[in-house]
Image (cartoon, rainbow, N blue to C red):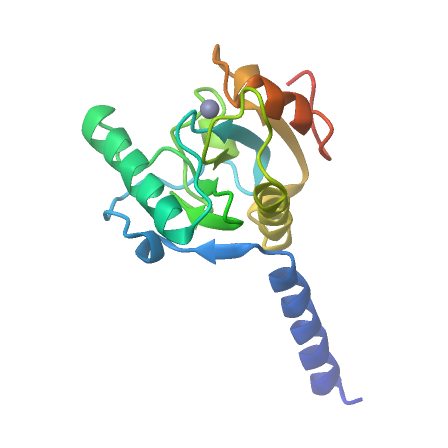
Length: 188
Ligand SMILES: [Zn+2]
């Protein structure tokens, strides 16, 4: 192959690899987000991933998950007086990943980790049960996708919100589960 063809094939293979690792993504327009302006993440690529639950309702359909996203954004903006929804991403039990503040933006989800992490929440309450397989796979794929695209460090560490702040988040059952995930850090 000529050099340009080789480069093209390599570029396409890399693109396919990167996109193959991503979950189904619903961007802000897709869930009807209000417009907001937030600052960039000071530490990029993010060296930490913080896992949350919303401690709210579960959703298994696109319509219900989009409604959850709008409700959470409204609470974070109108009640908490934050600039935007606090999380970088949320995942539903419909298997989709919802863009919150998104990649490369500082979230408002785990004080002392906000400037160095990507905050990913799962929509629902996981005190007594873990997210379904669709949601678990989507979180793992989102992390792989973020690493492949250079938004998350390839030597990142993963923690549950309760390791950063006094909170029950992401719920006892889900927290015990994520302790088995790759890159979990027991002593952040
Ligand atoms: Zn949390």
